[in-house]
Image (cartoon, rainbow, N blue to C red; front, side, top):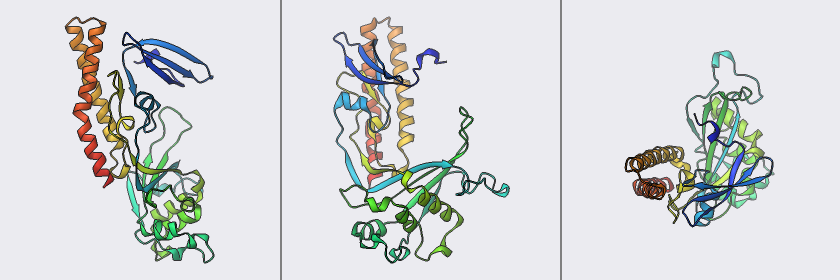
Length: 302
C-alpha cells in the first residue's frame, strides 16, 4: 500500500535541480501554505496537457491548433428531466461508447429571426461540418457514495481555421440546430433526442477546447524530470488514443525505472550511480515511445 507516500490536496508549485543532482520541491497545500522538501531523485509530470512541470522544465510548448473544436460534459445518468430511467430500460439508453452523427445540420432549423442566420462563421463553417457526439455510461463511484452513475458526453464540429470557437456556436440555440437533422423532429432517434436535449439545456456548462497538439518530449535536460501522458504528447482526441497512450507510457516507465533500480542495487551502486541509472532509464523511455506517439499524433490530426 502507498500509505503515507500519497499527499492529498497538495501540488508541486516549483522545483529546482540542485548542484548535487537532487531535486528540491516547493509544495502548495490546501490551506494556502507551502513547504519546501528536497532530496528527491526523480520528478514525474503527469498532470495533463497544461502541465506546469513541463512548462517550468522546458518552457511553454509550441501548440499547433486544428480547425475543429471539442466540447464535453459529465451529467447524471437519468432522463433529461432528472427522473430515473424506466425499469424496462435498465441503465438507460447508453452503456458502452456510442457515436451519434448529424450529417445534415441545416440553417432551416433556426428561427426566422435568429442572429445565427447572419453569422457567417456559423452558417459557412460550423453548419457545413458533420457534428458528432460520443456518449458512454460511467458506473457509480466506489469511493464516494454520493456520486452515482454518470454519462460522459463529448463532441466536435468544424470551426474557422486559426480562430477560437465562435461564441454563437456555444449557445443553446446553436446546439439545438447542430443536432437536429434537416428532416426535423421525425428523423430524430431517441438517442439523438436525448443528446440534443442535454446539450441544449446544459450549453452554458459545456467545457470547450480546440483540437491541438504539442511536440513530443519525455524528459528535460537534467534527465531527472519525466513527462508522461498528455504532459509529454497531448494530441487531438479524434482517435481516442490519449488515455491509451498515457497508460502505455506508465507501463513502460514502470518497467524501465524498476529495472534500473534493480540493476543498480544488484551492482551495489552508490546514490550517484543509482541516479545515473535512472537518467538512462528515462532516456530509454523516450527512445522507445516517442516515435510511436508521434505517429499516433500525426494520424489523429489528419
